[in-house]
Image (tube, rainbow, N blue to C red; front, top):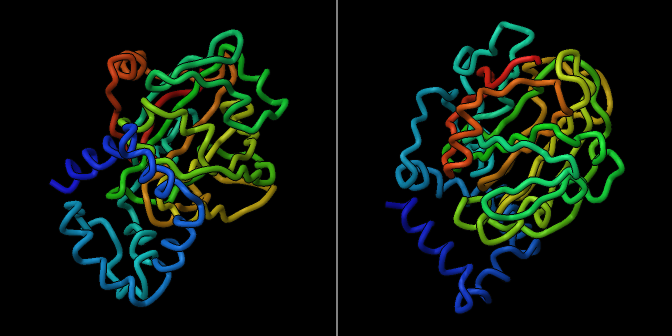
Length: 275
């Protein structure tokens, strides 16, 4: 019921009548205010109702007394609850979520939910865009009930984090169809030089009321399955860009994406293989 109400509210916000509400909801100032409140002790009172409303199963998580809502939202998983696929040539999912897959055309264009995208749009006009012609774009959408920490997909080296300021549209499919949110929202990206998949760009996209994208490391060595960062309150998305001929993704995932369906995946599970 809570999910249905959210969907109806979002549909309203993205109509002509609801556009003033949309302006308020996507404003970075509102997100900053909500994010700050979610770090206070008073916000802990929201946890129990949030769990009930969203049907969250806490069985996989370490039980503890949360100081604030964001402590709960970024709660730690129990050891062994998200095993990392042991095959080093398996492409592991960096997070829990829902997966969509897109082929990047020869002019670096692709479409997500009826909206046109270009690699340059995602990374703020960076010159790396040309490297991904004919490659693959994976979009992993985290819902509010998912584990909101994410890991490195392979061993190798990472660049510094590049921050791009923007708005905070929801990443729900109903909104993604109406707005090119992945090039309008606040986001961070880095370039991963991986052992098995070549040069990969990873982009963390903030969403409505996400207070912060918290990446733990700047440039340096990375290890497959090690925690890369976390999203504070709200839904959010990770986008992965792969060069041509570096990774093999099951055709079924592309077919489901074309039908508008997402594939549910879990942190550490295999979603593809080295090409």
